[in-house]
Length: 451
Image (cartoon, rainbow, N blue to C red; front, side, top):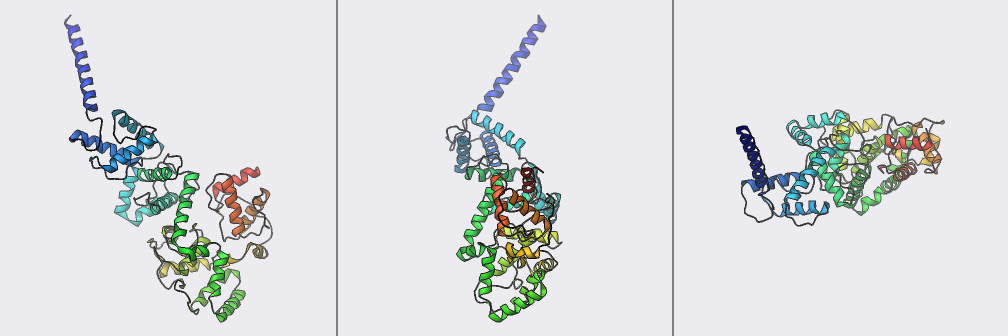
């Protein structure tokens, strides 16, 4: 009998503990702006802010103070969940936040990025380079989500910062801050809000960045960016007749592979006729600088595969990122500013037999005579892009022609027609529409060909 009483007493104590804990856990709800606070309420508000911030609904600091930004973040969350957007947190809202927060961590967030950001702050460029060397992957060639690391993630972070969605460091590590920024971008652009940067999201981000850069570079620069051929003609039109003749003679003597070198030599003697026409190398190019030297720099970086944006003559965040990548690849100080050393090495690389911006002005029709005969093999071993000339490019053109995307003659030169054909194929197959035939694009082409 005594044992029964003891057992009953234990059961009653357990029930009392359960109900007391439940009452205490629900005592802070509902949470609303302007209510009298205590330590328990502040801690709960702090948890709400933390969860909403990392899911991309709240942009303020985690303070424990229920202000306008907190109420706005709560309403955004409630609206996305299909609830009435009251800005008041009930116990049900709080439970739903916890559930979605845990789901977000499983899908692609966590604290790894915060640790990586701190490391980058402490170790500077060395930390950035360590992340970058883990995976040098072109932007948009894969889906970026939890724990993804590489140069493509760094570019994603740069792009999102340019658009005002990301305020962290460009660490190259996809963590909580990056996912929150992606979610905010997706929500603002009516995309599926999952915090994962897949093909559609990556394409939309790149399109918005290019749109912003083109808008900021002015009407003249927009016109210059429409085609590389028109940019070349515009620049040549303001050059003295004698300089043009000298350049033509040197170009003919040196051959197409040395066009850029001859052009650079003549530019020293060409009188500048406009405020924005500046010789490449006469000044350091950094963020915000505009001019024809920036145009030439962008074309050069593009031809070497470091720059994938529009040629605008405006040094924005994309150009700075390209400069930094070139510097890292060539063991220079990766500060994103193109000074004398960077430009000298860039010219050296261009004159070393690689395709360059001046040679790239050759049209696809005239490039046919310069390209070697025969057919190369199309494979996903390397990226094919604007200004390149090779048998792989010829194979790409032949493949696109078979599939009905390329109407010209296979020349082996990657010009405007080829780029348009690649973009058309990418658009049809829901790939990143950047005009670069990378691994994903080439594999899709081979698959459609049945190879």
